[in-house]
Image (cartoon, rainbow, N blue to C red; front, side, top):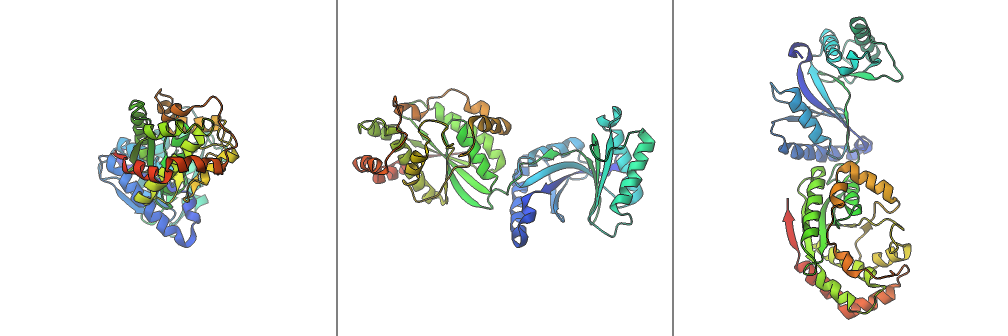
Length: 398
């Protein structure tokens, strides 16, 4: 592919709901650009990230290849706040140059080689450009039809040539990579995820990242009564999720002895809910220390016998911080599909010795009474115990 017509490779980013933020839009855009720059630190290439009207352009250094542009595009596709990522060509702001670039780009495409139906979609952000959008569509589309004999299909094209006239240049591209959507991580604050080794909690963490929260992860290990397998698994899950936000931290609480105390309380059917309340109390203590404003869990209503509305209400009563449950209305099939899409399912399905197996009664309570749980916590001195557990945490940085 010659560079004379196609100019320089670059990456064009399309924003999602950020554009609806009105007077606060600039704050969200600044956060998004900061996240993009941080994500691209893992790509061995010096790039220039610039804000345009409604889009963000990433300009590569002179001499960069299409393969390097693809690497940049794939990396930023994991950054929440973007809906489309296009590997584009930056060409001179001249109708003849745009025409040649469009012809060359189509000539190199696989779709053209098999005679695909095509359309040209132009957008003129700079109204000083001599041709209107529909005029540019007809100019380039007519030339493509004459040169390659491809049929035009404006309703359902197999190949779309996009032309965007900007302030200083024109971007030409075909196709794109779907982005994560949502809001930039960090634009909504910080929260703490109760991270098991299962399928649900990693998906819950991802969903809240997409709503602008930067999350830390808290894992409860059954140590000393279980092995370290669950810690390794939680660490692997956090590493997989870190590509969406960066600077992730995993905190691990040795929870085995506290579980033993709950089991010895003699309240077998309430043990699971009592344990969950103690986890939440400990998580709240950790959240205060790291300045997180909410807790996140992977609870889904009715998914297991203990996840009833009464039990969820009993858990909420344990803490003052809000508990966010993004999966509360999802079924297991939906959660697994999302886990597969974000790449956590395979890790979550690995066998491990989860701390929850230490307190698995034959029949769990489905209508836990808050007063009964408070009596258990009073005997355990839960307020002091959760502080001790928070003091014992270990931090794992990526």
